[in-house]
Image 1 (spheres, rainbow, N blue to C red):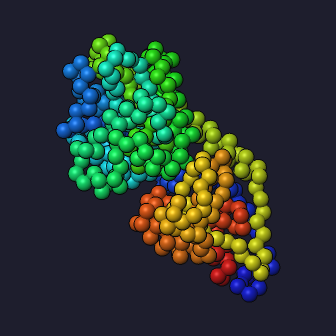
Image 2: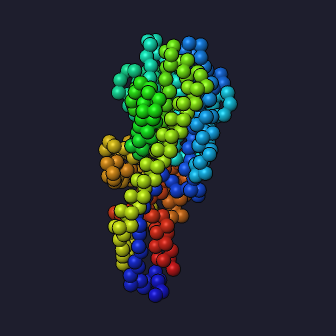
Image 3: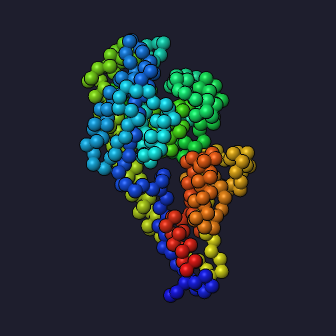
Length: 369
């Protein structure tokens, strides 16, 4: 049957509505970015005379060595030597690699004899202690050049500043918690570390990453026994091995979830009929996702309008615009990324139903032919 702009009887497209957890990759490798906290002119905490920057780097290198033995995992480091790396550059490294998981390694400190291992994901501080931990890690930006510009006036000492960090990372919150829980389970079950649990706090290094991200506090250098353990070769290898196994746990869990999703979606395969009179295809730009519903006012979205909303998997997805041609939306996406939303991406719709970009472009091509 020949399809023309003027005479189309019926166009049937079979869609498998498989929506990626984040952008599609040209490689099938699972990409992990390992971030050794601090470094160079920033020593981190000096509990009991130890150097947090050195311990974090040793643990990261040990994790990486094990990950590199996995043929289907690509390992990237934010630093492999004792150098200072800006927080936003650490996030840029992960974003440029289109990473599947970002792990930042640190050591804690306290003026008491506190001990134990904990993991953090980005979120509002549940208590003053979580705020103080985040404030300590975020204060690194004061060592950076032009930090006022790079972080849009963010003030690590102001709890209100943290609220602005949260919205975009919420899309990855569940996955981040899953990854953090895998690490925490290994720490407690394998190594017998005191369980300081998975918590949320406003770490700026996590905010700027566009993938599931976890900050690990491996223990307290200010505690005599724990500090000695973390500073030892044995302790570092044990911590690294647990984190390595936890990453594999998370990867396996993710693959199992995707396989179930794929099976369910194939079983729910639907025919989409495009009539000759109306082609209800629209390309929209997703700019945000949140568990909280925001008013669809331009001031909530940096002046952009029109904004539409879709509730999906208990998340509110916010979309800018509605474009009929792929070429047009690509140009608009470039403008949006330069203006304000660097993590924005294109989502095609047929009516009110999401479809794959490939399917949308096939329909658009048939309409033109």
